[in-house]
Length: 306
Image 1 (spheres, helix red, strand yellow):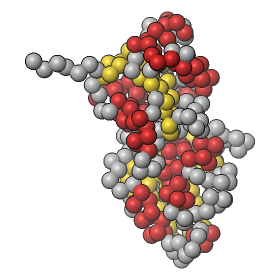
Image 2 (image 1 turned 90 degrees about the vertical axis):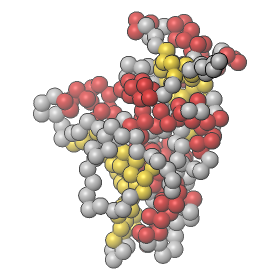
Image 3 (image 1 turned 135 degrees about the horizontal axis):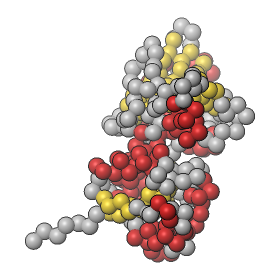
Image 4 (image 1 turned 180 degrees about the vertical axis):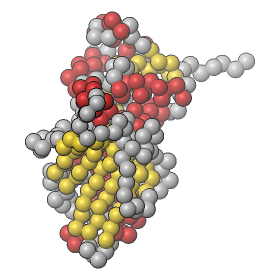
């Protein structure tokens, strides 16, 4: 008689938020059991720790401070502590947490699969790191290159207040923000893209719900050697060859931000003009898909061996 393998148990701490809801919906496709807390006790540490004790994996969809508290609670459980996947920014630069961008290096997926603590990457950093790190590691771009990153995201990633302002009649068509140059994603990009110089990051929000485009302008003459646009394209193609989620595409004359909404893939492109010796690198993804819940599902699969 066959004995069924027990389903892995997952507790989403903060499942009522945008990312938590997205993860829960995606988990329907996996052979797992989702543990849910009584909504009236979602901030009760005793109730939360009780569910953590029953779980194989806890996915934290919480503000940074709350994620720090949950991680400390898990650490206090000793050998009975569950594995952790954190969707906040709290641990994305922590040396003792695996960075959950599986395509970042050839062995990153293995590192995620064997780690007990994994930090889900940010949406903007996912696109920026995907474009920059291969160029730095290939020696085409120096670590101290003066990188400028421009990005536009759908409003769904900005929380309840931003969503309400955009769905209201007459909501803003476009918002440029982060102009204090202290955006919380910059340290994450700088570290994992292997940059030795703080990049300038200028994010914005458009009047569309889901989608994202990250763009990085380059003067080809400022790169190492006589680099052509084709060299940049080939470097990205070689890095992500065989990936089902990071796809290197040919250049297009224009890109629409919403195109990949409700998908878990990312498209990478090099748009170059050899006569002007200029290029623009672009990454297009869904801020709620590959930029959040989709990446979390990918990490859950790796961590649970699914």
